[in-house]
Image (cartoon, one colour):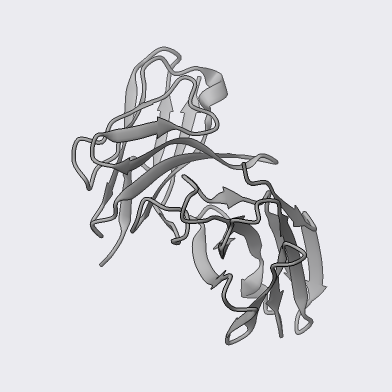
Length: 114
Length: 112
């Protein structure tokens, strides 16, 4: 089944403790991206990747890191999480590195930083 | 960059009535307009999309219309059902853009 898989689904952590949210797609998509969703603020892009080893900042990149060493994986790293990073996170992928194809979203990761 | 405005932010309709959500975009280069449905606690899912070479597209009870001159596009849901209750997002993009630009979302509630 074609899908984007995120893990974990839920995560509670403490301020400053490094964490990684994994994202993997099995559709050979070129484009991958991370979004955060907060009430009243819609979907905001954190980072995106046009292909392997090609990443760039989205609209709200502060406090996050990403890597794209393999085409299928695009982990999101929070090196020193803070409470303002408490949010619902979605990974998304698209067939081509152009914004005229639909995104497939993962199931989401609800992160709480205390 | 592209800017997408979506209205209304909330919409309540009686079951069986129609619902219309409207979006405007700013970048005349945009040529791809998808709509996503997000049920409570779930991922956004693509429900329909339209490209700029067509003016309307239908899929059963949902349809999307595009007016390139006015730079706006709309989602139409007919014969609404309680399971249509969700947040709907519009988006706009183009081959030269690095990302889809999303609207702020519309919470649709279908009242039984």
